[in-house]
Amino acid sequence: MKMLSLKKHVVAVVLLTASSFSVADAKQDITDARQETQIWTTYALSPYLRASDLKVSVHNGKATLTGKVDEDVNKDLAKEIAQGVSGIKEVDNQITVHSDYQPSNSNNYGESIDDITITAGVKSKLFWSKYSYLATKVETKSGRVSLSGTVESKDARDLAERLATNTRGVIGVKNQLVVSDKTDAKPGAGAKAKDVATEATTKVEDAWITTKVKSNFLYSSNVSGSAIDVSTNAGVVTLKGGVSSGAERALAVELAQNIRGVKSVDAKGLTF
Image 1 (spheres, rainbow, N blue to C red):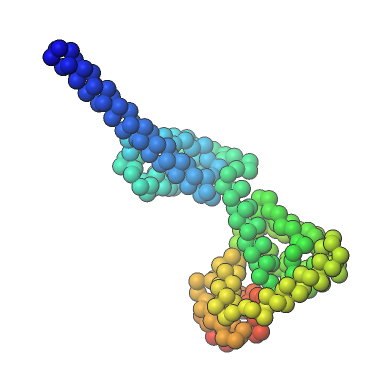
Image 2 (cartoon, rainbow, N blue to C red):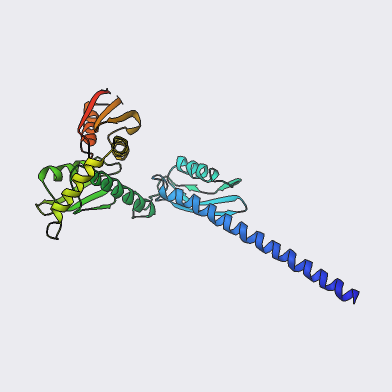
C-alpha cells in the first residue's frame, strides 16, 4: 500500500511539474508574440521602414531581424526600434543592406493608418467650423483628400479646401463640393442643421474654444501648434508666440477665426 501511495505521489509531482512548464511556456509564447507585433507595427508605421522587406521573430527576449533595406541608417533604425520595446534583452540584426533595393510602393498598413489619420484631422476641422459640413464626405487615399457633398456657400466650399490642404500629411485635395441651399436630402434638414449650429454656438465656452483652436493647429502642416500660446476670453481668442512667416501667422488667424463660437482673434502677440 505504501509503495502504491508513493507511486501516486511521484506521478502527481511529475504531472504538476509538466503543467507548470506548460503554463510558463504559454505565457512566454504570448509575450514573444506581443513583442513581435509591437516591433512589426512600429516598422509598418515608420515612413522609412514601412515598405521594406522586414521580418521579426522573438524568443525569450531575443529579437531576430531579417530582410532588406536600402541604407545602413535604416538597418540601424530597425535595431533601435526593437531594442526600445519593453522586455527585449538582445537584438540579432541580420538585416542586409542593398543600395539598389527598391522598396515596395504598394499601399500598406502604414499608409492606411496615415490616410485614416488625415481623414480624421480634416473631419475634425470641418466639424468645429462656423459653417455646417454635415453633408460633406471626406475620403483619403495615399495622402490625397477628396471632398464631396453639398455646402451652404462658396465661402464654405473654399474654406473646406483650405482646411484640408493645410492638414498634416495631405499631398493634394480634390474639391467636388457643390454649393446648395439644401445640405441634406430630407426637407428642412439644412435649416435644422443651422439651428443646431446656432444653438451650439451660444453654449460654447472659452475653454472649449481654446482646445479646438489648439487642436486645429496641431493637425495643420503649416502652423507650429507647440510654439503658439492660445487663450480665450468671452469668445475673443488671443494668440502669442513665434511664427516663421507672415503666411503662417495669417493661417493661424484663419484657423482660429473659423472655429465655432469665436468672435474675434487678437494676433498682435504673434511675431516672426
